[in-house]
Amino acid sequence: MNSHDFDIIRCPSCNVKNRVPRSKTGLRPKCGRCGTPLLPAKPVEVTDATFKQEVLDSPVPVLLDCWAPWCGPCRMVAPVMDQISAEFSGRLKVAKLNTDQNPATAQQFGIRSIPTLLLFKDGRLVDTMVGAMPKAQIEARLRQVV
Ligand SMILES: [Zn+2]
Image 1: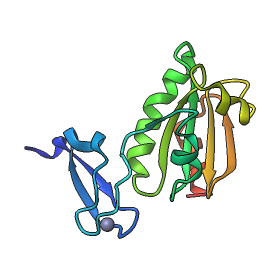
Image 2 (image 1 turned 180 degrees about the vertical axis):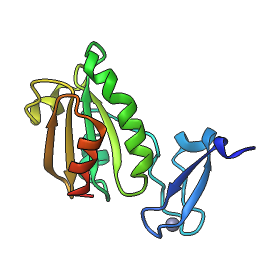
Image 3 (image 1 turned 120 degrees about the horizontal axis):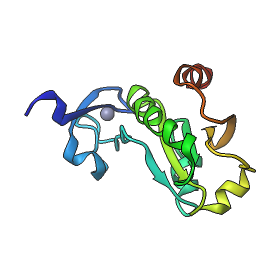
Image 4 (image 1 turned 135 degrees about the vertical axis):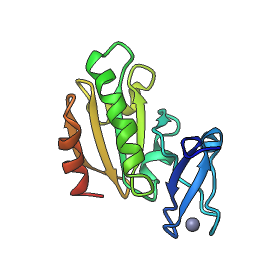
């Protein structure tokens, strides 16, 4: 196996870097040293049912990408979310919410246009970014919190 078959995921607890086989990243891998569940290096799908557990109760800040399949600008944001998820691995969880399928959460945060990025820390909404913003601009806003 070469290095492209692995994701490097930093443990949120002891900070050690874990090499996780790409085929296992969807299986909630655990840290090889301390056993803490590793955050996925890819965005996680969040629904109205899992929003509290995945976002509000997260031990690290969460960037929530609110999107819908028919939204063109949302498709431009998607690869940026993948990159940010990998770059901030272990320090930030990137999540995606399909606002068509999960109207309760979208309504709770008053989302009127998509894409909208919501940034949560310690169960509170700390920043809102409306529209398809450039990656550098999103990262600058993230660094104020993460
Ligand atoms: Zn660990």
